[in-house]
Length: 78
Image (cartoon, rainbow, N blue to C red; front, top):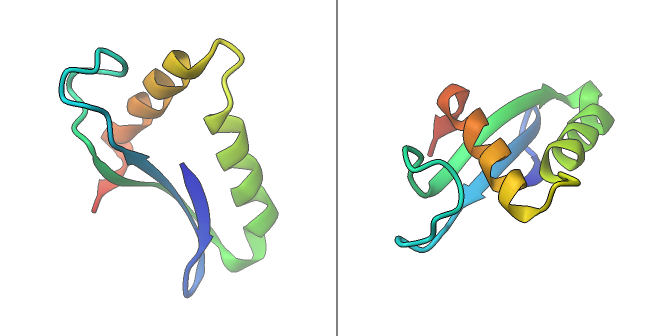
């Protein structure tokens, strides 16, 4: 997951690249690049904060992957 500056604002991306037989995450989510949220140019700090909060789960890496996968249905796959 990362946040980057785009032409008109800030995009938060989830790049999912798990091995085919990896049992982590939701089985219905394919590997790929997903645009999770887009923030206007004036909301830079909010974009970074949202990305950090979503990408850090105190329950561990497996819970983080599931949490990100759960955001995918509303995301745009690129």
